[in-house]
Length: 500
Ligand code: B12
Ligand code: SF4
Image (cartoon, rainbow, N blue to C red; front, side, top):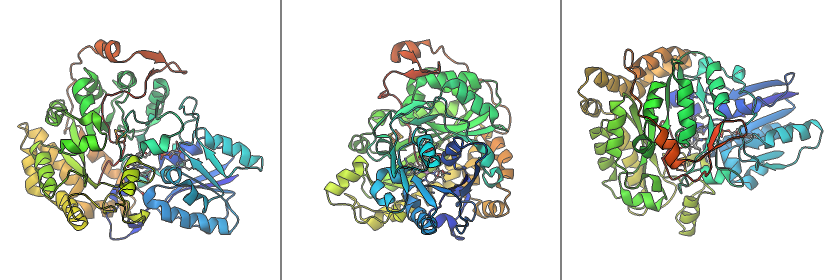
């Protein structure tokens, strides 16, 4: 069977005027995961429109398309083209799950939720000549999932080809997040057995890893076992964590650091506490953000802080206050977003009920445009403030001031190199990407992450209290550990917008 898998790009990613480094970071893991379920003699290819042109004039037996909200329009366009020639089109992913009726008009089969259960079921039906029009995921497990088909990924086209996901979902329920909508009808947070996660890591060449998990620390027993297993592997890695995980899980961050953690994405979201309860981001309330940052810096971990503008308590001073705070804390990189109500989220429902959604042009639901009526800001003011926040945070003077919060010369240099490397050398990134050479920049990233030399091992306090006190453990089917209750009130991640 000839199967063509496509990750369509949002319009701007294909524009010659938009810096493409952000879109050349991570390969399409979702499709490579699904490809693992195909048979050895199937002829399968994966196409990522963010990094290559995708021809649509061929006639495979099956076309598989993954749609995010920002690429929904393009996904439908490609789907329509293939269907016009009689090719069976399967559409899945986050946006399809949020709006299945909309997607159904452009597909022979739509998939709701994660694909590990529905996709093999569909393949059986398709091969038998009776595919259904819709499959909804219910049975959620990562046990027995075949290895990701990394051989189908064009590694040289990405700066970070070793992205990896060892869990799905998150234990929290923030109003604005895609999570509840995507995982409804089944488990909302589940883990790969530790052994198979370690085996997956072992299969990856080189040193650098980027964990795309929404909340790598979401199950402390799992994270602890994973970090123990990774110790001594010589890896350098980045991930998403939470203020609470940093402050309140004894020994866990030290374990992560000794296993190679060098930069952590943290969803601070807002410096305005009243916003947190409005967005049900309870896990951040009352936490000392500054203490979390200091602790990470002491351990040699850089911080990528994520902030959202436009919540109902935000007034015109929010931009300057946020940037000032972030720079003053010595945060190395920051990601800013305009609050965006993804369909089928609680936030969308609330704004829709209040008649505050102004349009449904999904192309513009990219966290850079205002698509609703903000409470205390004008839409133009919100967009202008968002762009100004980026400019102000990444000014040379801010980078220097942020770096000066540390006294160690090597940490200062690392701060400057990392922040500047990300935002100040866009023409250089363009040249590397267009020349298909972006992977050659990876050793520099590793060198900076490593702090230009070896990193000392950090003492780990005993973490027995952690397991005893907060989490009763039960063996997962495969022998790994899993929290009994997925609604843990522990740390926060932002399962989302890593690099702006
Ligand atoms: C890595 C990542 C990126 C990377 C690369 C994306 C890539 N190559 O896939 C980069 C940096 C480019 C990126 C950019 C953006 N991203 Co992004 N990103 C992610 C992140 C963190 C991980 C994605 C991932 O690899 N997951 C792991 C794999 C295994 O899961 P998966 O891809 O979802 O695939 C599974 C299922 O979806 C399903 N499935 C998917 N397709 C299909 C098809 C079929 C037929 C079937 C059966 C099943 C199926 O099965 C797969 C296996 O379970 C997610 C958060 C998240 N947890 O998903 C956000 C996320 C996808 N991003 C998001 C957004 C908004 C953006 C940006 C607009 C951000 C911005 N401000 O610029 C841009 C533009 C994205 C675009 N191209 O349109 C949102 C999407 C919201 C939505 N409703 O669509 C998310 C969910 C973050 C969030 N919480 O808001 N992103
Ligand atoms: S903590 Fe992050 S991933 Fe979890 S629900 Fe909230 S925003 Fe989503």
